[in-house]
Amino acid sequence: MDVIRLGIIGCGGMATAHQVNMKDQFAEDVKVTATVDIDLERAKKMALALNCDTYVTDYRDIVDKVDAVLIALPHYLHYECGMYFLNSKKHVLMEKPLANTEDECLDLIRTAQRRNLVLMTAYVQRYNPVVLKVKELLDKKELGDCFQLSIWTEQHTQREDGSWMHQKDKLGGGQLFSHGCHYIDLMLWFLGDPVKGYHMGSNYGTEWMEREGTSNVVMEFANGAMGYHFGTWGAKGSKLKYSIHAHCRDGLIEADLIGRKIYIHSKLRGEQFNKNQAEVVFEDSTTGKNTNEENKHFFECVRTGKRPNTDGPESIQGLRVIWRLYDAEDNNKIADLTGLGLNRPWDRRGMDK
Image 1 (cartoon, rainbow, N blue to C red):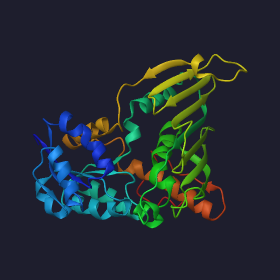
Image 2 (image 1 turned 45 degrees about the vertical axis):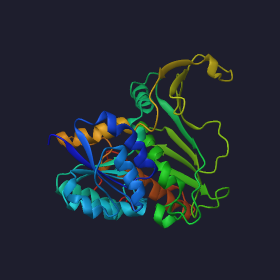
Image 3 (image 1 turned 90 degrees about the horizontal axis):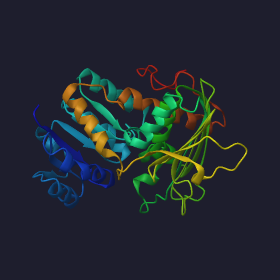
């Protein structure tokens, strides 16, 4: 196809983050031909910003006007909308998470494969230049083997009373499922296959959440490395913000995802680390949510048939880790994570060990 006709389903915050790059960068080979939102004025606003003539409230009204869709709806609507467009032979870029249940994810993946369509999950951090550089440093063992990887995310996320984001059934869980899925995916990408782990979550301090608004995850990996993730939606102040620390045998890789810099701490012995003494080895000048490279990758896959870096079979694996962690937490146990990992078989239920 000469020009990919794209429909945007859901015109809220995440769709707006995608919109910022689409108008300028993809004007020649991608055209947004329709926008959809239950709020017609919001759909119209995005349509006007993208020089698009069609804006509606029902996504079924645009099926003949698109080749692919970006779905940025509340999580509990991902499956129904995704299946409609896959069954209509349209490619799908799905905002994370892929869907709220394992059976829904498997159904989406199988349908996409059966119809030879691109189904990609928008795990935007995988396309973040800073994260990509961390991955490169770890893979090259620039500071030796990584034995401890820690990821922090501190933010305040509270919607209006009754919001779907506060409800565990509509969200799919709590903060860990909705936002932490990015970082569980990164830990699997960085460290490989997990073997066991534990999640402790609470809505203390985030009482608007039915399930946890703050989560702590510890995992052990097959190579012996440890992974830790802390995430909260209750932060009223922040020190670590969004950051990654990879402790390696010969030093520390520190990635500041907000400041978009990577520091190497490797010359200190027995002293308190001081950022001013660290070496800056990477600095990224881009801004925003990194949807630019993510979108470009999706469109490339649509054109060439290339497998997306964050396709359905990979993106379900991090969700399976979270589901096992939730199950173990509910039963006051350590989670057995054996058999899981980004390159493990996907076409079976992940709770089957």
